[in-house]
Amino acid sequence: MLGMAQEMEQEKQTPIQNRLGRYIEVLNNMEDTMDRYTWLMDFGKKSATIPEQHRLKEFEVPGCQSQTWLVPHFTYGDKIYFTADSAALISKGMVCLLADVFSDSTRNDIASFEEKSLDGLDLPNLLTPGRRNGVYSMLKVIQSYGVNKD
Image 1 (cartoon, rainbow, N blue to C red):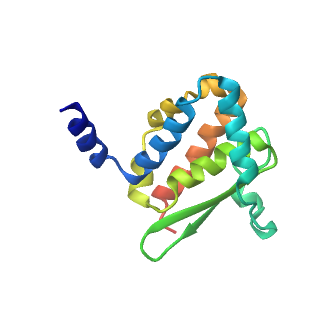
Image 2: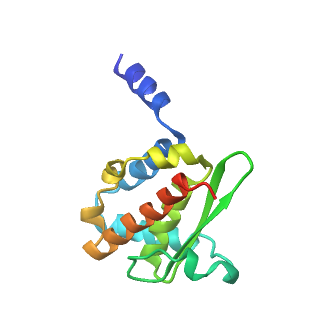
Image 3: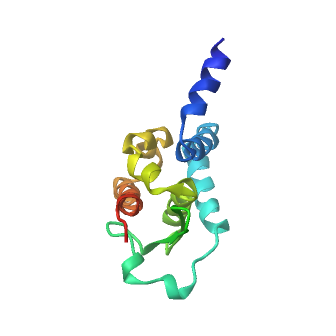
């Protein structure tokens, strides 16, 4: 019965929650914090870089310890996709993870996302306070696109 209840709960989740849940599962399956940190840097290393023409001040994420860019791409179907990059691998890993989690989402899904949903990533044990602040700055930028109708 528990398996069925979990399946029903998962069906209620938004695509954002489902994608975030997969990353939480990957990271939580690693016992060592250093393994999680290394995975995040490798994720950043393997992620695509954004073109130079997108490395604009308007796409920079304020509050990050290193230069970090988050670029929204809007579709006609009210979906938003994000590309991201950073000068530091750990920041790039985090911003690319968030870009993937929130890509292919509607403005409403993005706007209704609750910050506490990131708790499963266990950021206090994974990142320094400065880097954690950067993650929450990234989230604020993403959520600003969920409410703005340009």
